Amino acid sequence: MSIIVSYSIDYMDPSPCKETFDNIDDAQEWVAEEVQRRVEHAVAHSSYSLTEKDIQDMTETEYSLIAITDGVVTTFPTP
Image 1 (cartoon, rainbow, N blue to C red):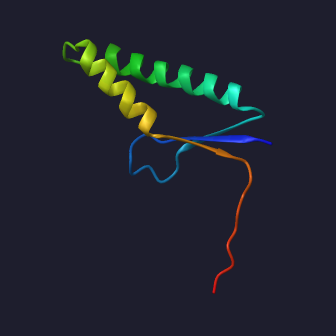
Image 2 (image 1 turned 60 degrees about the vertical axis):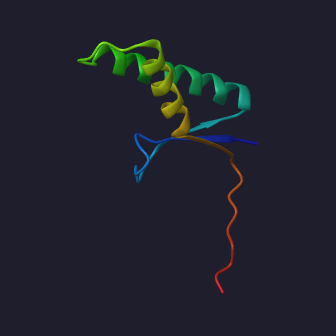
């Protein structure tokens, strides 16, 4: 069974990054690393002084942009 992780840039992203993994542990590890990388990038390039709350909010936002599904594609017949 393969695991597919979709990671959007924002809520309106029409073509999110998609990664495929053989197991959930690898998928979760990649997600944690990628979220950390994106948050660190945003913090490093921010023109504002950020609080721990700001960074926590950024992290939560990043996690909300991720969808993890199994590799089974389900198609429904059209009526």
